Length: 110
Image (tube, one colour):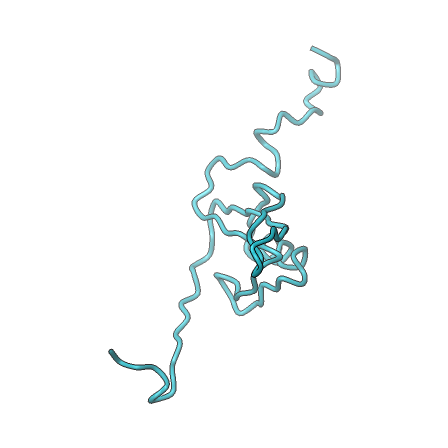
């Protein structure tokens, strides 16, 4: 074992940012989708993946489990490459319950 490893200065990965141990809730942020935050009214915007990641980390104590690319199909059958981040939290806040109200007559009841 090196002197650096013996000193405890070397990260083994188990204690690192991408450690999924004890995670009880996982969420995905993607450059291909926009939505509301699961826990508050913050807009998870596909134009600013980094701001969305930072929001989950700073506001709700999530941590990064994975960052990478995802290839999906575009409207013409070709590949569409997106950036995704998978975030996890050991003690997530309550999920925000959203209620959607449709104007009368907009939705067919059957």
